[in-house]
Image (cartoon, rainbow, N blue to C red; front, side, top):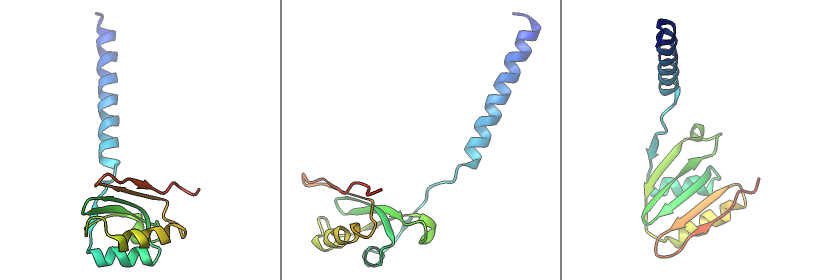
Length: 114
């Protein structure tokens, strides 16, 4: 291998490592804010939730962009809470774009309306 080929290969490696470092440091971590279950229900009732995933007792989701900067949240609540499902189902007409409930053999998804 000629010296010019080695130099070119070294520069390619340097550029790729630099691009990887820039990408790594520019990505924002997606932090989930832990909230109380009553705070979650209030956010759903006030039409501030965009997505919800319910897995057993864990409720995770994403706020709408105009509330809490569209951040992510998680909370713990009763498994298969009919009250929560009813509130979410009612709110889906007002803008919840995705709801997934899994556990106990039941999966329900509300597809995006856009």
